[in-house]
Image (tube, rainbow, N blue to C red; front, side):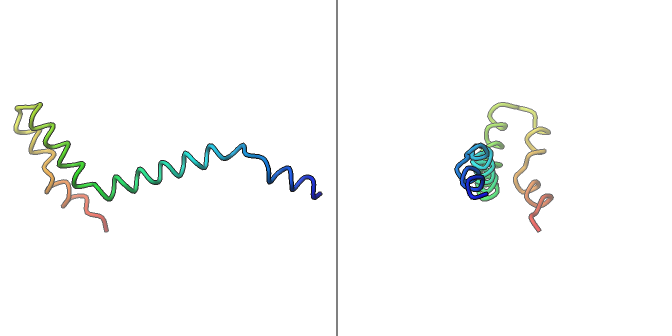
Length: 71
């Protein structure tokens, strides 16, 4: 029984999965922290690329922030 437990403890098969989950959690956390900066950057890029005012007004930072407030 102890040999089985020791062998189970030394196996590292699931370590890749755990590392990927931690990396994804960190990226999601950073995206939430820098949410306003990311939205402003995307809005600035769209202002430069598209001349259509409707597209630019749809991604207005204040509209996105007020409609999707974190509760």
